[in-house]
Image (tube, rainbow, N blue to C red; front, side, top):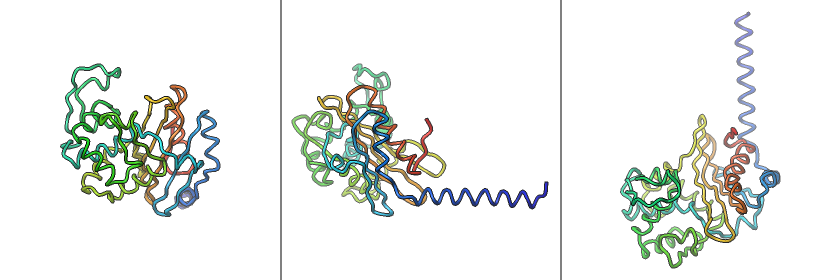
Length: 271
């Protein structure tokens, strides 16, 4: 085969790929199509997407996006930051000793580092972190970073699970944007470490940072999935919450978010 023909063909394919990638990266998100994805999973909720380069927000349900709910385990993000700032956590690899209690989940029933506890969403580790931070510091830190309604409630070690603190999806975006840019009133190295701990998946030159949440101890249960996607041309910040009415709805938190991110050409989703 003619080498010139092969070279021309490869060049043409590469050019097409470049055009396709550029078109994908430059497209404007279409929130009007997201309700179809929610309906496919038979859940009600909202998804908020924020482009830092464009300074634009996109959502399928603005009213719900501005409604506050218990943060559940998404509170592990600020709780980790508070732990570092106050010295309650020494490092991401500090090991918390298991007390022998069966927490109903084998992965939790062992000594865990903060890095592992975050990934496994180990409640008992973060309850210990909150107790170490203490009531006075916790209340102050919530005020300092303007986290949601900045309330705790009577129990220092479970207020994010069944207490008074509440935050909206829009406020999650605001908090995460400041965290990504190290603009919260905490030491920069701690903010960067929390972001690093949140890394969930890498695909080529794309990085997904995320945390789930499930407020399962209240009557009207809420599920969360929040985080960032780092791309070569932008940082996309997202926050989803849905009503959890049956156990399988918990799977929809990630599935809906990933399908939307995939549809908008931000991060691939291979099921």
